[in-house]
Amino acid sequence: MGDPDAVRVERWPRGDGAPTEKRMMRALELEGFDVLVYTYRPGTVFPEHEHPRPKCDAVLEGVLRVTVDGNAFDLGAGDRIYLPAGTRHAAEVVGQETVVSLDGTLW
Image (cartoon, rainbow, N blue to C red; front, side):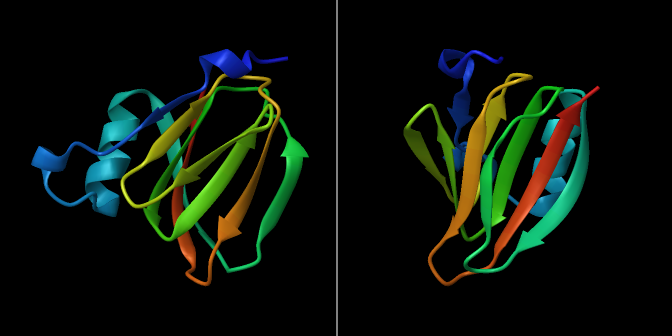
């Protein structure tokens, strides 16, 4: 099981311009992540689960709430959350806006 205390959230630096898909994808790839783009409709809910590899979810549009050990993190455009391997978490789209997310896996 992952360490929920090792979860970290980062915000896109204000001085770096807009957090576009290309720029955020490049940032994750430079950190060694393989990245896929996903779109989630309003009302999408992912029950609690875990991944065998370290993960990073970055949001391009909308609001994605990721809950780890009872702590909710609302991620908006430019935000990313790093989850160690084995960290149990849930996620859901918040509000009526579609979420566009980058899903990074560290192999």
